[in-house]
Length: 358
Image 1: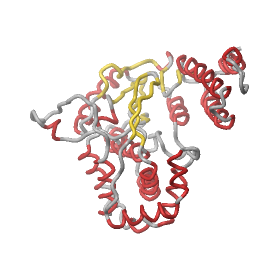
Image 2 (image 1 turned 180 degrees about the vertical axis):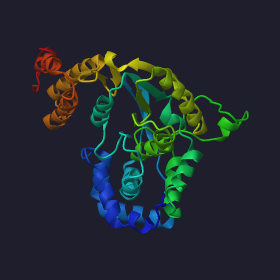
Image 3 (image 1 turned 135 degrees about the horizontal axis):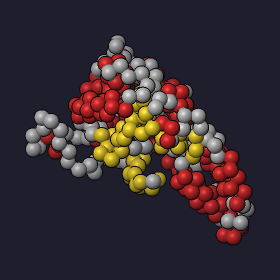
Image 4 (image 1 turned 90 degrees about the vertical axis):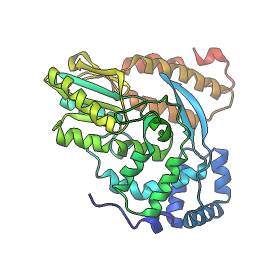
């Protein structure tokens, strides 16, 4: 493929940085950091521009926090001015590089997403499905390998130097030491790994890092019925024995990228029995919402009602959250579930707990 070049002047232009600011602030208008940046918008953008042009820009410190959705995750929130830079970079490099990805990579891409991935799975619906999941994907992404992949796709040295700074500024990974073929005793200590969950750039890096594997599976192994959503891979076939053989080829290819398959989350199952996929229990011709999703939303709805009653949230923010879940749930057979959850919670200013669970 032709490498991407000649983009630096456009990347650091005031117009592109302003576009990056507008994208970074979406849904974050009430944040004090966003408000402070917006108060002196022109000054802040010109300062960023000068730092980038002079090579003096350095990413700030991440704010780390844990969320618990089925399992604990460490989320890294970059300072707002860094998020402006992330969007400015993605404005220039994502569209041309995204066009080189396989069609069936579905995470964080325009026109893709979970619902498109599930629909594609159902369109294939062979007898057997092989689900392969990568162990601790984001904490395992090797910095040197990622930089090499970027250099095989981008030839603009100043853009690459900026991407290097963002990668090098990642918080230290909490991964235990993992050894791969050819490593000596000190190799895992000498190689930096891990990119932050939560960065816009990390979402793109996660797609790019496994793009070589995607093309290998599609074009070298010749597997058409293959899709990926971040670190979840699904291969479908009518031949159960053949699916089991594919695992070894994928494992070997992943080892070259310093990645491992999850030891307990790789299994062949019959499509007719339903597959736990991207928040749904998916059958060839229907979908159900996973049970824990409904329970989590019911608890969240009660918390939102309490926050509204105490004046801590606006109806606009609450409605956006509820409509988002309804939009996800409507892609499955959930009319009964929605009718059992939504009418039970009352939103009323100054209401007590009894009103939120009536």
